[in-house]
Image 1 (cartoon, rainbow, N blue to C red):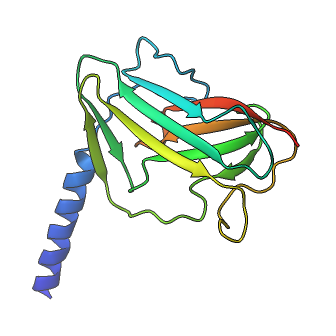
Image 2 (cartoon, helix red, strand yellow):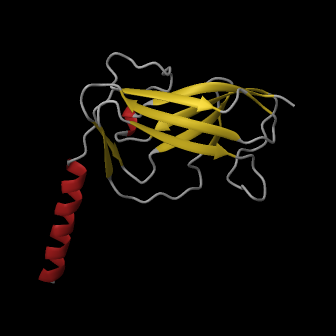
Image 3 (tube, rainbow, N blue to C red):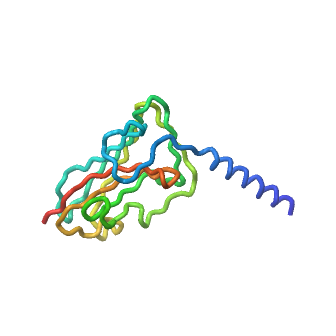
Length: 172
């Protein structure tokens, strides 16, 4: 019995030791940021699509870039192996969520930290395919209209997740 108590105690120490060491060094994001850095935000987020107009059956190529624009290193903490997410909203960013990149995906439950030196950047690239037999996790068919793609840096805590968005259009 004492053996298991010691193992349990050591496990708690290790768990809380890692969780307690996580810190964030950036301002909160509310989903309405522009690609321009805010004076109080040491991170500049940019989102680029391969084009602005798509047909309903075309994939969307996305580049989500995070750059440390401050003069000090910035530590990013993640609660899982997921570092970013994408959402497609009908209309603007306040419109209903049509699709979420992370839905149905599994991520390792481990606390991770990544430090960005001054001027350093991270580039996340994704190709978002229309939903079909080969890509069941893809975007459901989009009707002609305007949409917003929201890119989110999935840092801890959840309330301080910076994001950036851009609009695109679907035409027949």
